[in-house]
Length: 214
Image (tube, rainbow, N blue to C red):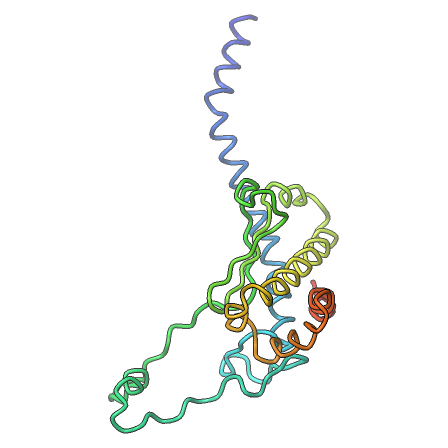
């Protein structure tokens, strides 16, 4: 009996790294699934409201409370001899070159607790893409919740974090914020900024009211 217990313990120790890795992969897949169910309706609501930059060729007719008619449209023909403009708009016999479309909107990323350094969340702006970073350990605990309850809980937290991130960016990272949101939304934020406590609460309501979870 003693030898069998030792054998079982040795087998467990040998396969534990594999079990841990499998558990980690399962958690990552579950978080990805949860993220997909939240990111899509969140970005759809923001685009419908005109809060994000939109490619009019891909999503014609999109507009809303933050819609900006100045966004989009065709660039004017390059002036003769404008080498830089001609490089952007080649006139050869082939199909016209297209600019690489950079990702935009809101992205959710789960990171280890240690990387947040005591914060409830963090964010990162890369041109027109705003990434909200959430604590992986905390949100992994929600995986087993009923999907409808879980997703509603998470989306409300994400919108709250997003609203506060945009609020703080307005005061500390204005140039980055101007690139990340539409001109109309930025103008609305400026209107709310007459009172410092206004931006996040007002923005939260505008966003959450348009989010429809399925």
